[in-house]
Length: 356
Image (cartoon, rainbow, N blue to C red; front, side, top):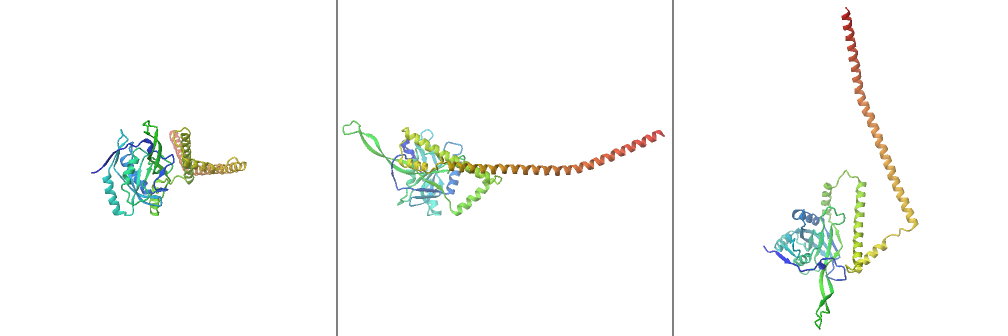
């Protein structure tokens, strides 16, 4: 069985998302992940890497058009990494070839569009895996393969997928020997790095029906709609906090010189800040306070009404219980009185007999 045992020499800078102006390959604008891919990746992880520090790696199948990648299917690939030497990994490309041949017999239109990993972060071997997977992309394909990290951790609140494309970054700070041999010259070096690509979860009509059937077994019918809405709000606020902290960490790293500034990222942050509403307007503050007070008043009245109805039901149940128990006690009391009267009559008869 053929396999791939590779020793990578990629530096750690090659495995981080691009943070400086770069020269991209044919552009990938969007990656759509279908539910079947998420289910397959989760099942793959729980079979081979659950409870360990390992990760699962597989191949993404689907189609691409005008920079949009649509990952509709996937399959697992035997993969191992050396825990002591992170630059050594094993990938069974013979298994990959056989699986592709079988998939072509079933879905002739599906082709290799990239690979996935359960991450949860980029590792030093991912560029090498990208080069291996790129060999199986059909000839003449314009859109390059993508790399998708599928986070299978249950505590994640946001979208579990993060997509990347490979870009070529020119580093002109590589020292080389000058004409005089003093090493003062410099030459440009091209490095490959990963750059973020927007990703989303999409599904066809048949997949939506299947997901709905799965969710019927997961959703708790005892949880009210209000509780679900509150949970969704909390989840959204938690994700917003996570993104804001990520932006803060990026800006801190740029100001301290640990990362190169990216004009596109900074422009997006400025656009986000500009879109925020101005909360210092007195009329807006008053309107928000009035709306907030009205909502709290409705909640307060609803709680009072609910409490009064509960007390009313409790009183009715108590009355019904007393009536039922009271009838039984009445019969017992009558029987007890009859018994006492019989005993007194018997005592009187005994006394008369003794006198005679």
